Amino acid sequence: MDTRKVMGLALIVPPVIAIVGWFFMGFVVFGGVGPDKPGEFIAELRANSEIVKYVMPLITILFLMAIWGINYIKNSMEGGPGHLLAGFGFFLVVLGSAAQLGEVAFTIATAEGPGSMAGAMHTSSQAMGTVATAITMVGAALIGIGILQQKNFNPLVGGLLTVAGIYCTVMALAAYDSPLMGIGFIAIVVSFVCLGVSLLRNEE
Image (cartoon, one colour):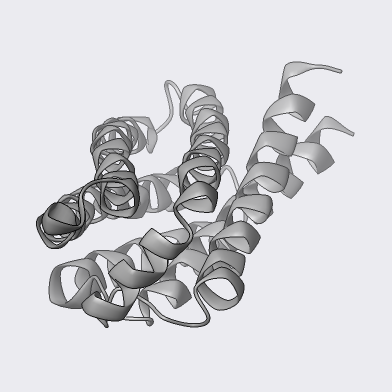
C-alpha cells in the first residue's frame, strides 16, 4: 500500500470513527447531556469516569491521525500558490491540537478527580477547548483557502473546509458549549473524508 493510499485512508476512517464515538458518548453514555448544562454534565462525566478515561484519549488520537493526512496534503502543495497559506494553516492546526490535549486532560480530571475540584477542572477544560478549537479551526479555514487557491482538489471540498473552519471558529468563541458546535465538527469530518476519497481516486 503506497503513501497516498495510506494518507487517504487516514483522512477517511479515523475521523469517521472519532465523530461516531463523540456522538455515542454524548447521546448514549451521557444521555444527551452536554457541557451547556455544566452541573448535569459534570455528574455524567463522574458517573462514567472509566469510559471517559479510555474513550476520550482514543477519540483524540483518531483525530490526530486525520491531521497526519492533512500534513501529507499540505506537503503535496509545496511550490504551488496555495502552499504558503496551507502551511500556516497547518501550523495553527498543530498548535490547536496540542492545546486540545490539555482539554482532554482536564476533562478526565473532572471525571476522576476529587468532587470538590470538578467544577474548576470543567471550567478549565472549557476554557482550554475554546481557545484550542478556535486556533485549530482558523487553521482549517486557511488550509481550505489554500486548496481553493491551488485548485488541487474539487473547489467544493476547499469551500466546505473553509466555511466549516470559519463556522467552528465563530461558534467556539461565541458559545463553545453549544450543541451547534456539532454541526461544524460534522462538516470538518465530511471535508476530511472528501479529501481522503480524492486521494484514493487519484491513486487509481
